[in-house]
Length: 306
Length: 306
Image (tube, rainbow over all chains, first blue to last red; front, side):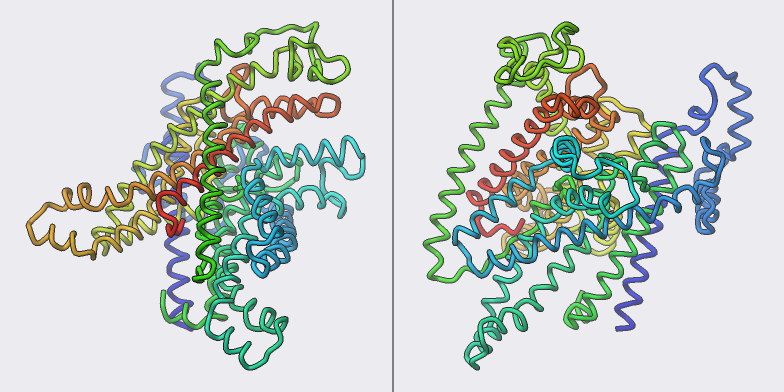
Protein backbone atom coordinates (compact mmCIF):
# COMPACT_ATOMS: atom_id res chain seq x y z
CA UNK A 1 0.00 0.00 0.00
CA UNK A 2 2.81 2.40 0.83
CA UNK A 3 4.37 2.03 -2.62
CA UNK A 4 0.98 2.61 -4.21
CA UNK A 5 0.48 5.82 -2.22
CA UNK A 6 3.98 7.06 -3.08
CA UNK A 7 3.42 6.43 -6.76
CA UNK A 8 0.13 8.33 -6.67
CA UNK A 9 1.75 11.24 -4.84
CA UNK A 10 4.58 11.50 -7.37
CA UNK A 11 2.05 11.53 -10.16
CA UNK A 12 0.13 14.25 -8.32
CA UNK A 13 3.19 16.48 -8.16
CA UNK A 14 3.95 15.97 -11.87
CA UNK A 15 0.39 16.84 -12.83
CA UNK A 16 0.36 19.97 -10.64
CA UNK A 17 3.61 21.18 -12.20
CA UNK A 18 2.12 20.54 -15.62
CA UNK A 19 -1.00 22.51 -14.79
CA UNK A 20 0.94 25.45 -13.40
CA UNK A 21 3.05 25.46 -16.59
CA UNK A 22 -0.12 25.43 -18.66
CA UNK A 23 -1.66 28.31 -16.72
CA UNK A 24 1.59 30.26 -16.90
CA UNK A 25 1.92 29.66 -20.63
CA UNK A 26 -1.59 30.82 -21.35
CA UNK A 27 -0.99 34.19 -19.73
CA UNK A 28 2.66 34.87 -20.49
CA UNK A 29 3.28 33.28 -23.86
CA UNK A 30 -0.06 33.65 -25.61
CA UNK A 31 -0.82 37.08 -24.21
CA UNK A 32 1.18 40.08 -23.13
CA UNK A 33 0.14 41.32 -19.67
CA UNK A 34 1.56 44.78 -20.28
CA UNK A 35 -0.50 45.18 -23.42
CA UNK A 36 -3.58 44.47 -21.33
CA UNK A 37 -2.55 46.64 -18.38
CA UNK A 38 -1.60 49.86 -20.13
CA UNK A 39 -3.89 52.02 -22.22
CA UNK A 40 -3.46 51.56 -25.96
CA UNK A 41 -2.01 55.03 -26.50
CA UNK A 42 0.81 54.58 -23.96
CA UNK A 43 4.28 55.40 -25.22
CA UNK A 44 7.03 52.93 -26.04
CA UNK A 45 9.16 53.86 -23.02
CA UNK A 46 6.18 53.35 -20.78
CA UNK A 47 5.78 49.81 -22.07
CA UNK A 48 9.45 49.10 -21.49
CA UNK A 49 9.32 50.54 -17.99
CA UNK A 50 6.35 48.41 -17.04
CA UNK A 51 7.89 45.36 -18.59
CA UNK A 52 10.97 45.81 -16.41
CA UNK A 53 8.81 46.63 -13.40
CA UNK A 54 6.89 43.37 -13.75
CA UNK A 55 10.04 41.41 -14.56
CA UNK A 56 8.79 40.53 -18.01
CA UNK A 57 12.15 41.34 -19.62
CA UNK A 58 13.71 38.31 -17.96
CA UNK A 59 13.92 34.90 -19.64
CA UNK A 60 10.72 32.85 -19.46
CA UNK A 61 12.12 30.15 -17.20
CA UNK A 62 13.16 32.78 -14.63
CA UNK A 63 9.68 34.27 -14.81
CA UNK A 64 8.09 30.87 -14.35
CA UNK A 65 10.32 30.07 -11.40
CA UNK A 66 9.36 33.34 -9.73
CA UNK A 67 5.70 32.76 -10.44
CA UNK A 68 5.79 29.19 -9.19
CA UNK A 69 7.75 29.90 -6.02
CA UNK A 70 5.30 32.63 -5.08
CA UNK A 71 2.28 30.56 -6.04
CA UNK A 72 3.37 27.73 -3.74
CA UNK A 73 3.04 30.19 -0.86
CA UNK A 74 -0.40 31.24 -2.04
CA UNK A 75 0.77 34.50 -3.54
CA UNK A 76 -0.73 34.95 -6.99
CA UNK A 77 -0.37 38.72 -6.98
CA UNK A 78 -3.01 41.34 -6.43
CA UNK A 79 -6.18 41.50 -8.42
CA UNK A 80 -5.85 44.29 -10.99
CA UNK A 81 -9.43 45.16 -10.49
CA UNK A 82 -10.26 44.88 -6.79
CA UNK A 83 -6.82 45.60 -5.28
CA UNK A 84 -7.00 42.61 -2.95
CA UNK A 85 -4.86 39.47 -3.16
CA UNK A 86 -6.19 37.18 -5.90
CA UNK A 87 -5.73 34.17 -3.66
CA UNK A 88 -8.12 35.52 -1.03
CA UNK A 89 -10.73 36.46 -3.62
CA UNK A 90 -10.71 32.97 -5.11
CA UNK A 91 -10.60 31.19 -1.75
CA UNK A 92 -13.67 33.06 -0.57
CA UNK A 93 -15.61 31.79 -3.57
CA UNK A 94 -14.44 28.20 -3.27
CA UNK A 95 -16.96 26.78 -0.76
CA UNK A 96 -20.10 27.46 -2.87
CA UNK A 97 -18.47 25.73 -5.85
CA UNK A 98 -17.54 22.69 -3.82
CA UNK A 99 -20.98 22.45 -2.19
CA UNK A 100 -22.62 22.68 -5.61
CA UNK A 101 -20.34 19.99 -7.02
CA UNK A 102 -21.06 17.63 -4.14
CA UNK A 103 -24.79 18.31 -4.31
CA UNK A 104 -24.72 17.60 -8.04
CA UNK A 105 -22.86 14.35 -7.48
CA UNK A 106 -25.42 13.35 -4.85
CA UNK A 107 -28.34 14.04 -7.18
CA UNK A 108 -26.63 12.15 -10.01
CA UNK A 109 -26.19 9.09 -7.81
CA UNK A 110 -29.75 9.40 -6.56
CA UNK A 111 -30.99 9.16 -10.15
CA UNK A 112 -28.40 6.83 -11.59
CA UNK A 113 -28.06 4.11 -8.97
CA UNK A 114 -31.67 2.88 -8.86
CA UNK A 115 -32.19 3.24 -12.61
CA UNK A 116 -28.86 1.61 -13.44
CA UNK A 117 -29.49 -1.35 -11.17
CA UNK A 118 -33.04 -1.71 -12.44
CA UNK A 119 -32.05 -1.71 -16.09
CA UNK A 120 -29.19 -4.14 -15.45
CA UNK A 121 -31.47 -6.61 -13.68
CA UNK A 122 -34.27 -6.24 -16.21
CA UNK A 123 -32.04 -6.19 -19.24
CA UNK A 124 -33.71 -5.70 -22.62
CA UNK A 125 -37.07 -5.02 -20.97
CA UNK A 126 -39.07 -1.86 -21.67
CA UNK A 127 -37.69 -0.31 -18.48
CA UNK A 128 -34.17 -0.82 -19.77
CA UNK A 129 -35.03 0.63 -23.19
CA UNK A 130 -36.71 3.63 -21.61
CA UNK A 131 -33.73 4.31 -19.37
CA UNK A 132 -31.35 4.04 -22.31
CA UNK A 133 -33.48 6.42 -24.38
CA UNK A 134 -33.60 8.96 -21.55
CA UNK A 135 -29.84 8.62 -21.08
CA UNK A 136 -29.16 9.24 -24.78
CA UNK A 137 -31.41 12.29 -24.75
CA UNK A 138 -29.80 13.48 -21.52
CA UNK A 139 -26.34 13.30 -23.01
CA UNK A 140 -27.39 15.55 -25.86
CA UNK A 141 -28.92 18.21 -23.62
CA UNK A 142 -26.70 21.24 -23.16
CA UNK A 143 -26.36 21.83 -19.43
CA UNK A 144 -26.85 25.59 -19.64
CA UNK A 145 -30.00 25.19 -21.71
CA UNK A 146 -31.42 22.71 -19.22
CA UNK A 147 -30.72 25.27 -16.50
CA UNK A 148 -32.59 27.99 -18.37
CA UNK A 149 -35.53 25.69 -19.03
CA UNK A 150 -35.65 24.78 -15.33
CA UNK A 151 -35.67 28.47 -14.45
CA UNK A 152 -38.45 29.19 -16.97
CA UNK A 153 -40.62 26.37 -15.63
CA UNK A 154 -39.98 26.40 -11.87
CA UNK A 155 -39.02 30.00 -11.17
CA UNK A 156 -40.85 32.01 -13.82
CA UNK A 157 -44.01 29.99 -14.48
CA UNK A 158 -44.64 28.16 -11.22
CA UNK A 159 -42.84 30.67 -8.99
CA UNK A 160 -41.95 27.74 -6.78
CA UNK A 161 -38.19 28.15 -6.50
CA UNK A 162 -35.69 31.00 -6.67
CA UNK A 163 -34.10 31.42 -10.10
CA UNK A 164 -30.72 32.45 -8.79
CA UNK A 165 -28.83 33.27 -5.65
CA UNK A 166 -27.37 31.43 -2.73
CA UNK A 167 -28.10 30.93 0.93
CA UNK A 168 -31.08 28.71 1.72
CA UNK A 169 -31.70 25.09 0.78
CA UNK A 170 -34.24 26.18 -1.82
CA UNK A 171 -31.43 27.86 -3.71
CA UNK A 172 -29.68 24.52 -3.96
CA UNK A 173 -32.53 22.64 -5.60
CA UNK A 174 -32.48 23.86 -9.20
CA UNK A 175 -28.69 24.11 -9.67
CA UNK A 176 -27.90 20.78 -8.08
CA UNK A 177 -30.68 19.05 -10.01
CA UNK A 178 -29.39 20.63 -13.21
CA UNK A 179 -25.84 19.46 -12.58
CA UNK A 180 -26.94 16.04 -11.33
CA UNK A 181 -29.17 15.45 -14.34
CA UNK A 182 -26.21 16.15 -16.59
CA UNK A 183 -23.99 13.63 -14.85
CA UNK A 184 -26.68 10.98 -14.33
CA UNK A 185 -26.76 9.40 -17.84
CA UNK A 186 -23.11 8.39 -17.90
CA UNK A 187 -23.27 7.19 -14.29
CA UNK A 188 -26.35 5.13 -15.03
CA UNK A 189 -24.72 3.46 -18.00
CA UNK A 190 -21.66 2.69 -15.91
CA UNK A 191 -23.71 1.15 -13.11
CA UNK A 192 -25.67 -0.88 -15.64
CA UNK A 193 -22.69 -2.23 -17.56
CA UNK A 194 -20.68 -2.82 -14.38
CA UNK A 195 -23.47 -4.79 -12.79
CA UNK A 196 -24.16 -6.82 -15.94
CA UNK A 197 -20.51 -7.79 -16.16
CA UNK A 198 -20.33 -8.83 -12.52
CA UNK A 199 -23.59 -10.76 -12.69
CA UNK A 200 -22.05 -13.04 -15.33
CA UNK A 201 -19.09 -13.97 -13.16
CA UNK A 202 -18.40 -17.33 -11.62
CA UNK A 203 -18.72 -16.26 -8.01
CA UNK A 204 -22.29 -15.13 -8.63
CA UNK A 205 -23.10 -18.58 -9.98
CA UNK A 206 -21.43 -20.05 -6.91
CA UNK A 207 -23.48 -17.86 -4.61
CA UNK A 208 -26.66 -18.87 -6.40
CA UNK A 209 -25.65 -22.52 -6.30
CA UNK A 210 -25.12 -22.21 -2.55
CA UNK A 211 -28.72 -21.11 -2.35
CA UNK A 212 -28.18 -17.44 -1.56
CA UNK A 213 -31.34 -15.47 -2.17
CA UNK A 214 -31.46 -13.32 -5.30
CA UNK A 215 -31.70 -10.11 -3.29
CA UNK A 216 -28.59 -11.02 -1.31
CA UNK A 217 -26.76 -11.97 -4.50
CA UNK A 218 -27.41 -8.55 -5.97
CA UNK A 219 -26.82 -6.49 -2.84
CA UNK A 220 -23.93 -8.32 -1.19
CA UNK A 221 -22.08 -9.99 -4.02
CA UNK A 222 -22.73 -8.13 -7.24
CA UNK A 223 -23.25 -4.51 -6.28
CA UNK A 224 -20.08 -4.17 -4.24
CA UNK A 225 -17.96 -5.37 -7.12
CA UNK A 226 -19.84 -3.25 -9.61
CA UNK A 227 -18.99 -0.20 -7.51
CA UNK A 228 -15.30 -0.26 -8.37
CA UNK A 229 -15.52 0.81 -12.03
CA UNK A 230 -18.23 3.31 -11.10
CA UNK A 231 -16.08 4.96 -8.44
CA UNK A 232 -13.01 4.96 -10.69
CA UNK A 233 -14.73 6.58 -13.61
CA UNK A 234 -16.64 9.03 -11.42
CA UNK A 235 -13.30 10.05 -9.93
CA UNK A 236 -11.86 10.59 -13.38
CA UNK A 237 -14.96 12.52 -14.29
CA UNK A 238 -14.58 14.82 -11.32
CA UNK A 239 -12.88 17.38 -13.51
CA UNK A 240 -15.78 17.23 -15.92
CA UNK A 241 -18.18 17.44 -12.98
CA UNK A 242 -16.46 20.60 -11.83
CA UNK A 243 -16.58 21.82 -15.42
CA UNK A 244 -20.32 21.20 -15.29
CA UNK A 245 -20.49 23.12 -12.01
CA UNK A 246 -18.78 26.02 -13.76
CA UNK A 247 -21.48 26.06 -16.43
CA UNK A 248 -24.25 25.66 -13.86
CA UNK A 249 -22.89 28.53 -11.78
CA UNK A 250 -22.99 30.95 -14.69
CA UNK A 251 -26.62 30.07 -15.44
CA UNK A 252 -27.88 30.37 -11.87
CA UNK A 253 -25.62 33.29 -10.85
CA UNK A 254 -24.16 31.05 -8.15
CA UNK A 255 -21.48 32.98 -6.22
CA UNK A 256 -18.73 30.44 -6.79
CA UNK A 257 -15.31 30.40 -8.39
CA UNK A 258 -16.73 30.06 -11.89
CA UNK A 259 -18.78 33.22 -11.82
CA UNK A 260 -15.74 34.97 -10.39
CA UNK A 261 -13.62 33.61 -13.24
CA UNK A 262 -16.05 34.73 -15.91
CA UNK A 263 -16.32 38.17 -14.28
CA UNK A 264 -12.54 38.40 -14.11
CA UNK A 265 -12.23 37.46 -17.77
CA UNK A 266 -14.65 40.24 -18.65
CA UNK A 267 -12.59 42.67 -16.52
CA UNK A 268 -9.32 41.26 -17.91
CA UNK A 269 -8.23 40.59 -14.35
CA UNK A 270 -5.56 37.99 -15.06
CA UNK A 271 -4.06 37.29 -11.63
CA UNK A 272 -7.53 36.19 -10.50
CA UNK A 273 -8.12 34.06 -13.61
CA UNK A 274 -4.76 32.38 -13.18
CA UNK A 275 -5.28 31.76 -9.48
CA UNK A 276 -8.80 30.39 -10.03
CA UNK A 277 -7.62 28.03 -12.76
CA UNK A 278 -4.80 26.66 -10.65
CA UNK A 279 -6.84 26.28 -7.46
CA UNK A 280 -9.67 24.52 -9.32
CA UNK A 281 -7.15 22.19 -10.90
CA UNK A 282 -5.74 21.52 -7.44
CA UNK A 283 -9.19 20.56 -6.16
CA UNK A 284 -9.65 18.17 -9.07
CA UNK A 285 -6.25 16.56 -8.64
CA UNK A 286 -6.84 16.07 -4.91
CA UNK A 287 -10.24 14.53 -5.59
CA UNK A 288 -8.66 12.18 -8.13
CA UNK A 289 -6.03 11.19 -5.60
CA UNK A 290 -8.64 10.44 -2.94
CA UNK A 291 -10.58 8.31 -5.41
CA UNK A 292 -7.44 6.42 -6.41
CA UNK A 293 -6.64 5.74 -2.77
CA UNK A 294 -10.18 4.55 -2.04
CA UNK A 295 -10.16 2.25 -5.04
CA UNK A 296 -6.75 0.94 -4.06
CA UNK A 297 -8.07 0.29 -0.59
CA UNK A 298 -11.10 -1.69 -1.77
CA UNK A 299 -9.41 -3.55 -4.59
CA UNK A 300 -5.99 -5.04 -3.90
CA UNK A 301 -5.60 -5.99 -7.59
CA UNK A 302 -5.37 -2.32 -8.58
CA UNK A 303 -2.84 -1.64 -5.82
CA UNK A 304 -0.57 -4.38 -7.09
CA UNK A 305 -1.01 -3.75 -10.80
CA UNK A 306 -1.24 -0.36 -12.46
CA UNK B 1 -22.17 15.30 -21.91
CA UNK B 2 -21.63 16.44 -20.88
CA UNK B 3 -23.83 17.11 -20.71
CA UNK B 4 -22.85 17.52 -21.28
CA UNK B 5 -21.15 19.37 -21.55
CA UNK B 6 -20.49 18.02 -18.13
CA UNK B 7 -18.51 15.21 -19.58
CA UNK B 8 -17.05 15.41 -22.96
CA UNK B 9 -16.00 11.82 -22.66
CA UNK B 10 -19.42 10.73 -21.65
CA UNK B 11 -20.14 8.87 -24.83
CA UNK B 12 -16.80 7.27 -25.09
CA UNK B 13 -16.64 5.27 -21.94
CA UNK B 14 -17.07 1.68 -22.84
CA UNK B 15 -20.13 -0.32 -22.10
CA UNK B 16 -18.66 -3.78 -22.02
CA UNK B 17 -21.36 -6.38 -22.06
CA UNK B 18 -20.61 -9.99 -21.79
CA UNK B 19 -22.93 -11.47 -24.32
CA UNK B 20 -24.29 -14.85 -23.48
CA UNK B 21 -25.03 -17.24 -26.35
CA UNK B 22 -28.77 -17.04 -25.89
CA UNK B 23 -28.70 -13.26 -25.97
CA UNK B 24 -26.86 -13.24 -29.30
CA UNK B 25 -30.01 -13.09 -31.41
CA UNK B 26 -31.51 -10.33 -29.33
CA UNK B 27 -28.31 -8.38 -29.60
CA UNK B 28 -28.29 -8.67 -33.38
CA UNK B 29 -31.86 -7.48 -33.52
CA UNK B 30 -31.06 -4.54 -31.29
CA UNK B 31 -28.08 -3.68 -33.43
CA UNK B 32 -30.20 -3.62 -36.56
CA UNK B 33 -32.71 -1.44 -34.76
CA UNK B 34 -29.98 0.96 -33.73
CA UNK B 35 -28.69 1.09 -37.28
CA UNK B 36 -32.15 2.15 -38.37
CA UNK B 37 -32.09 4.85 -35.72
CA UNK B 38 -28.69 5.85 -37.00
CA UNK B 39 -30.04 6.20 -40.54
CA UNK B 40 -32.97 8.29 -39.35
CA UNK B 41 -30.53 10.45 -37.38
CA UNK B 42 -28.32 10.83 -40.46
CA UNK B 43 -31.38 11.99 -42.40
CA UNK B 44 -32.16 14.69 -39.83
CA UNK B 45 -28.53 15.76 -39.73
CA UNK B 46 -28.51 16.02 -43.53
CA UNK B 47 -31.49 18.35 -43.26
CA UNK B 48 -29.72 20.54 -40.73
CA UNK B 49 -26.55 20.64 -42.83
CA UNK B 50 -28.53 21.42 -45.98
CA UNK B 51 -30.30 24.23 -44.13
CA UNK B 52 -27.00 25.70 -43.02
CA UNK B 53 -25.38 25.43 -46.46
CA UNK B 54 -28.39 26.78 -48.32
CA UNK B 55 -29.27 29.33 -45.63
CA UNK B 56 -29.49 32.37 -47.95
CA UNK B 57 -32.08 30.54 -50.09
CA UNK B 58 -34.15 28.68 -47.52
CA UNK B 59 -34.42 31.18 -44.70
CA UNK B 60 -37.58 33.28 -44.97
CA UNK B 61 -36.00 36.53 -43.78
CA UNK B 62 -32.64 38.24 -43.47
CA UNK B 63 -31.30 37.07 -40.07
CA UNK B 64 -30.00 40.55 -39.30
CA UNK B 65 -33.03 42.53 -40.45
CA UNK B 66 -34.32 44.51 -37.48
CA UNK B 67 -38.03 45.29 -37.26
CA UNK B 68 -38.84 47.06 -34.01
CA UNK B 69 -42.57 47.08 -34.67
CA UNK B 70 -42.63 43.28 -34.68
CA UNK B 71 -40.33 42.82 -31.70
CA UNK B 72 -40.92 39.92 -29.29
CA UNK B 73 -43.64 38.44 -31.51
CA UNK B 74 -44.58 34.96 -30.26
CA UNK B 75 -44.54 31.87 -32.52
CA UNK B 76 -47.23 31.71 -35.21
CA UNK B 77 -49.45 29.23 -33.36
CA UNK B 78 -49.75 31.41 -30.28
CA UNK B 79 -52.04 34.33 -29.73
CA UNK B 80 -50.50 37.43 -31.27
CA UNK B 81 -48.20 35.41 -33.52
CA UNK B 82 -47.85 36.23 -37.19
CA UNK B 83 -47.60 33.78 -40.08
CA UNK B 84 -44.52 35.44 -41.55
CA UNK B 85 -42.56 34.76 -38.35
CA UNK B 86 -43.18 31.06 -37.76
CA UNK B 87 -41.05 30.82 -34.61
CA UNK B 88 -41.60 34.43 -33.56
CA UNK B 89 -39.09 37.26 -33.30
CA UNK B 90 -36.46 38.37 -30.80
CA UNK B 91 -36.03 41.56 -28.82
CA UNK B 92 -35.35 43.72 -31.88
CA UNK B 93 -37.78 41.98 -34.18
CA UNK B 94 -35.40 39.67 -36.06
CA UNK B 95 -36.95 36.49 -37.40
CA UNK B 96 -36.01 33.58 -35.11
CA UNK B 97 -36.34 30.82 -37.68
CA UNK B 98 -33.97 32.59 -40.08
CA UNK B 99 -31.48 33.21 -37.30
CA UNK B 100 -31.62 29.56 -36.30
CA UNK B 101 -30.96 28.39 -39.85
CA UNK B 102 -27.98 30.72 -40.12
CA UNK B 103 -26.82 29.84 -36.61
CA UNK B 104 -26.34 26.24 -37.72
CA UNK B 105 -23.50 27.40 -39.95
CA UNK B 106 -21.39 28.52 -37.00
CA UNK B 107 -21.99 25.39 -34.97
CA UNK B 108 -21.24 23.00 -37.81
CA UNK B 109 -18.16 24.84 -39.04
CA UNK B 110 -16.70 25.10 -35.54
CA UNK B 111 -17.59 21.50 -34.73
CA UNK B 112 -16.03 20.00 -37.84
CA UNK B 113 -12.96 22.26 -37.96
CA UNK B 114 -12.11 21.83 -34.29
CA UNK B 115 -12.52 18.08 -34.50
CA UNK B 116 -10.19 17.92 -37.53
CA UNK B 117 -7.53 19.76 -35.55
CA UNK B 118 -7.87 17.69 -32.39
CA UNK B 119 -8.07 14.41 -34.30
CA UNK B 120 -4.86 15.22 -36.17
CA UNK B 121 -2.93 16.13 -33.01
CA UNK B 122 -4.41 13.33 -30.92
CA UNK B 123 -3.87 10.59 -33.50
CA UNK B 124 -0.27 11.58 -34.16
CA UNK B 125 0.61 11.74 -30.46
CA UNK B 126 -1.33 8.55 -29.72
CA UNK B 127 0.51 6.69 -32.48
CA UNK B 128 3.83 8.00 -31.21
CA UNK B 129 3.13 7.07 -27.60
CA UNK B 130 1.80 3.62 -28.43
CA UNK B 131 4.41 2.69 -31.02
CA UNK B 132 7.58 3.97 -29.42
CA UNK B 133 6.62 3.43 -25.76
CA UNK B 134 9.17 4.21 -23.05
CA UNK B 135 9.92 7.85 -22.40
CA UNK B 136 7.96 9.13 -25.38
CA UNK B 137 4.95 7.32 -24.02
CA UNK B 138 5.52 8.65 -20.50
CA UNK B 139 5.85 12.26 -21.68
CA UNK B 140 2.80 12.15 -23.91
CA UNK B 141 0.65 10.36 -21.36
CA UNK B 142 1.63 12.83 -18.64
CA UNK B 143 0.50 15.61 -20.93
CA UNK B 144 -2.74 13.72 -21.57
CA UNK B 145 -3.31 13.34 -17.83
CA UNK B 146 -2.71 17.04 -17.23
CA UNK B 147 -5.12 17.98 -19.99
CA UNK B 148 -7.77 15.52 -18.84
CA UNK B 149 -7.53 16.74 -15.26
CA UNK B 150 -8.18 20.24 -16.44
CA UNK B 151 -11.83 20.84 -17.24
CA UNK B 152 -12.17 21.53 -20.95
CA UNK B 153 -14.43 24.49 -20.19
CA UNK B 154 -11.90 26.10 -17.88
CA UNK B 155 -9.09 25.75 -20.39
CA UNK B 156 -11.19 27.22 -23.17
CA UNK B 157 -12.25 30.12 -20.92
CA UNK B 158 -8.68 30.90 -19.92
CA UNK B 159 -7.35 30.85 -23.48
CA UNK B 160 -10.23 32.88 -24.89
CA UNK B 161 -9.65 35.39 -22.12
CA UNK B 162 -6.14 36.00 -23.39
CA UNK B 163 -6.63 35.62 -27.14
CA UNK B 164 -9.96 37.41 -27.37
CA UNK B 165 -13.23 36.10 -28.74
CA UNK B 166 -13.50 35.28 -32.43
CA UNK B 167 -14.50 32.41 -34.68
CA UNK B 168 -10.92 31.47 -35.53
CA UNK B 169 -9.76 31.61 -31.91
CA UNK B 170 -12.62 29.43 -30.84
CA UNK B 171 -11.81 26.81 -33.45
CA UNK B 172 -8.17 26.82 -32.36
CA UNK B 173 -8.99 26.59 -28.66
CA UNK B 174 -11.53 23.81 -29.02
CA UNK B 175 -9.28 22.01 -31.49
CA UNK B 176 -6.18 22.15 -29.34
CA UNK B 177 -8.02 21.33 -26.11
CA UNK B 178 -9.81 18.27 -27.49
CA UNK B 179 -6.97 15.99 -28.54
CA UNK B 180 -6.28 13.92 -25.36
CA UNK B 181 -9.26 11.64 -25.86
CA UNK B 182 -7.97 10.55 -29.28
CA UNK B 183 -4.45 10.12 -27.97
CA UNK B 184 -5.62 7.84 -25.20
CA UNK B 185 -7.68 5.53 -27.37
CA UNK B 186 -5.21 5.46 -30.27
CA UNK B 187 -2.31 4.74 -27.92
CA UNK B 188 -4.05 1.70 -26.43
CA UNK B 189 -5.00 0.36 -29.87
CA UNK B 190 -1.53 0.98 -31.27
CA UNK B 191 0.08 -0.92 -28.41
CA UNK B 192 -2.11 -3.91 -29.19
CA UNK B 193 -1.46 -3.80 -32.94
CA UNK B 194 2.28 -3.26 -32.51
CA UNK B 195 2.68 -6.84 -31.33
CA UNK B 196 0.74 -8.40 -34.20
CA UNK B 197 2.52 -10.58 -36.76
CA UNK B 198 2.16 -8.30 -39.76
CA UNK B 199 3.91 -5.48 -37.91
CA UNK B 200 6.69 -7.78 -36.78
CA UNK B 201 7.01 -9.01 -40.36
CA UNK B 202 7.22 -5.44 -41.61
CA UNK B 203 9.94 -4.71 -39.15
CA UNK B 204 11.83 -7.85 -40.13
CA UNK B 205 11.62 -6.71 -43.76
CA UNK B 206 13.32 -3.49 -42.72
CA UNK B 207 10.43 -1.08 -43.13
CA UNK B 208 10.95 2.37 -41.65
CA UNK B 209 9.05 3.35 -38.51
CA UNK B 210 7.08 5.94 -40.43
CA UNK B 211 5.99 3.38 -43.01
CA UNK B 212 4.94 0.87 -40.36
CA UNK B 213 3.00 3.51 -38.43
CA UNK B 214 1.20 5.13 -41.33
CA UNK B 215 0.84 2.23 -43.75
CA UNK B 216 0.32 -0.69 -41.40
CA UNK B 217 -1.03 0.59 -38.10
CA UNK B 218 -3.03 3.69 -39.00
CA UNK B 219 -5.38 1.97 -41.51
CA UNK B 220 -6.46 -0.37 -38.71
CA UNK B 221 -7.47 2.55 -36.54
CA UNK B 222 -9.65 4.39 -39.05
CA UNK B 223 -12.95 3.13 -37.68
CA UNK B 224 -12.04 4.03 -34.11
CA UNK B 225 -11.01 7.52 -35.22
CA UNK B 226 -14.20 8.03 -37.23
CA UNK B 227 -16.37 7.02 -34.28
CA UNK B 228 -14.61 9.24 -31.73
CA UNK B 229 -14.54 12.15 -34.14
CA UNK B 230 -18.26 11.89 -34.83
CA UNK B 231 -19.12 11.81 -31.13
CA UNK B 232 -16.70 14.66 -30.44
CA UNK B 233 -18.39 16.93 -32.99
CA UNK B 234 -21.44 16.91 -30.73
CA UNK B 235 -19.36 17.78 -27.67
CA UNK B 236 -17.63 20.61 -29.47
CA UNK B 237 -20.96 22.03 -30.64
CA UNK B 238 -22.22 22.09 -27.06
CA UNK B 239 -19.05 23.76 -25.85
CA UNK B 240 -19.04 26.31 -28.67
CA UNK B 241 -22.59 27.27 -27.86
CA UNK B 242 -21.70 27.61 -24.19
CA UNK B 243 -18.84 29.97 -24.97
CA UNK B 244 -21.06 32.01 -27.28
CA UNK B 245 -23.74 31.95 -24.59
CA UNK B 246 -21.28 33.57 -22.17
CA UNK B 247 -20.40 36.17 -24.79
CA UNK B 248 -16.91 34.70 -25.22
CA UNK B 249 -17.55 33.09 -28.57
CA UNK B 250 -19.31 34.30 -31.68
CA UNK B 251 -20.17 37.96 -31.18
CA UNK B 252 -23.61 39.38 -31.86
CA UNK B 253 -25.23 40.31 -34.16
CA UNK B 254 -23.88 37.27 -36.05
CA UNK B 255 -26.40 34.57 -35.22
CA UNK B 256 -25.10 31.50 -33.39
CA UNK B 257 -27.27 29.17 -31.32
CA UNK B 258 -25.25 29.94 -28.22
CA UNK B 259 -25.41 33.72 -28.35
CA UNK B 260 -29.11 33.63 -29.30
CA UNK B 261 -29.67 31.59 -26.16
CA UNK B 262 -27.63 34.05 -24.13
CA UNK B 263 -29.56 37.04 -25.47
CA UNK B 264 -32.86 35.25 -24.99
CA UNK B 265 -32.12 34.54 -21.35
CA UNK B 266 -32.73 38.18 -20.48
CA UNK B 267 -36.23 37.97 -21.93
CA UNK B 268 -37.26 34.59 -20.60
CA UNK B 269 -39.69 36.13 -18.14
CA UNK B 270 -42.19 36.98 -20.90
CA UNK B 271 -40.74 35.63 -24.13
CA UNK B 272 -39.70 32.05 -23.51
CA UNK B 273 -39.37 31.23 -27.21
CA UNK B 274 -36.18 33.25 -27.78
CA UNK B 275 -34.15 30.98 -25.49
CA UNK B 276 -36.09 27.79 -26.09
CA UNK B 277 -35.75 27.34 -29.86
CA UNK B 278 -31.99 27.81 -30.25
CA UNK B 279 -31.54 25.44 -27.31
CA UNK B 280 -33.70 22.84 -29.03
CA UNK B 281 -31.59 23.26 -32.15
CA UNK B 282 -28.45 22.42 -30.16
CA UNK B 283 -30.24 19.52 -28.50
CA UNK B 284 -31.52 18.00 -31.75
CA UNK B 285 -28.19 18.42 -33.53
CA UNK B 286 -26.13 16.83 -30.76
CA UNK B 287 -28.71 14.09 -30.32
CA UNK B 288 -28.64 13.04 -33.98
CA UNK B 289 -24.85 13.22 -34.10
CA UNK B 290 -24.62 11.01 -31.01
CA UNK B 291 -27.12 8.53 -32.43
CA UNK B 292 -25.17 8.44 -35.68
CA UNK B 293 -21.90 7.94 -33.83
CA UNK B 294 -23.33 5.04 -31.85
CA UNK B 295 -24.77 3.44 -34.98
CA UNK B 296 -21.48 3.92 -36.76
CA UNK B 297 -19.69 2.16 -33.94
CA UNK B 298 -22.10 -0.77 -34.05
CA UNK B 299 -21.79 -0.99 -37.79
CA UNK B 300 -18.01 -0.70 -38.04
CA UNK B 301 -17.13 -2.82 -35.06
CA UNK B 302 -19.70 -3.92 -32.50
CA UNK B 303 -17.00 -4.95 -30.06
CA UNK B 304 -15.25 -1.63 -30.12
CA UNK B 305 -14.87 -0.39 -26.57
CA UNK B 306 -15.40 3.30 -26.88
